[in-house]
Length: 255
Length: 255
Image: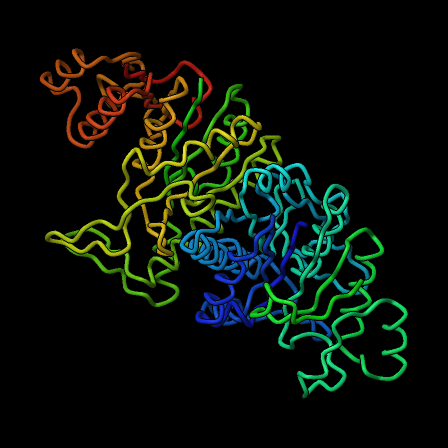
């Protein structure tokens, strides 16, 4: 089973939590790929450099100065910090942006009502499956940051959830794949304030039912919609899990 | 023949020259590795962030804030810019810091009279030959930045000339290796102001003679001393060459 784990900014901003997670990640005894988001460092750095965040309709626009900052931070500082810590724990990690070995070739998001700037969209064909397979087959663990390229010399800021999902679907053509989204809960809860109400397994039928009951609502709906799309595209399981439980059974498995 | 090419800051700071070089580099029709230095961006960025450069006896000390800046810049911005441009030109480049796949494990320079901070020293054993061989054998071109790690979670700022030399020696155990140092002249000149006085080939006997004659002097002496050390350690040729001539015969070959 190939396990793909996506972590977000919260863990990255907390050094102790990050180290603990990376130890647990190292202990996963199967081929694995780590995909990481960015954390709050980008806003801080943009602020320090006096670069005004460009927002349209509440969404951040990736202009050239912003792209430079996130490239340095995501592909440089965060990626190499994670990789060097994993090496310390004995996991043979290798950091990748989408440009490296043409790992992920995106395309700049087309301008409709909003020009998001240098933001990448992906399809399953974006993933260089051969490269990921080569690394995995040689016991190398890819650590993927949220920067891709367009194949024409342009780097692109790309959503880490989308990267993780797209790698999962592409790799499921030749591997049994489990995709894990780490988030701040231990999984889907009947009562968001009560960890004992964890729902361990959800299939599409139960999902529709839980949505109707109002148990799954708001931000969880697109997360689960996306997860079932990924499952229907060939991924065996998608798990919603807290980073500390990544190598345990405490999670919600979507199947 | 495995060709290892080292470029310095001058090319990196000049976008047109960099693109021209990367086109020429792509055209080299043999396995190759690119090693790149940093350029002036680090000083500029440190300045913008209000970080005072720490100097002792005229040498820059890599403290933690400086390490963070150079990691972002070298392993992030510069490395990914080079890799994405090479991908555009059709060279399947993959960027590496020393932490990635444990490519280069250095050790923090011991404190004698000066504490250089987070600076890495290397030995031939520092190089993960198997990783470089795996990439090369799969038609992937490693692009190595001047950041290594100590295997214990610490990143280290490391001299790019040293990285190039050490990779060259390590890889010469199983490959015929040519190491190319790009610099601002077309090679060793009898008259530094006259390109027609290029000396195409220098062996150690001629080197000693040229040193005695005063033709080779000052900064060129450590460069050539190091080059002959590398040759005596197993590298076939070391070339001193202008970046634009990397794929031509206009160079000084040390042998």
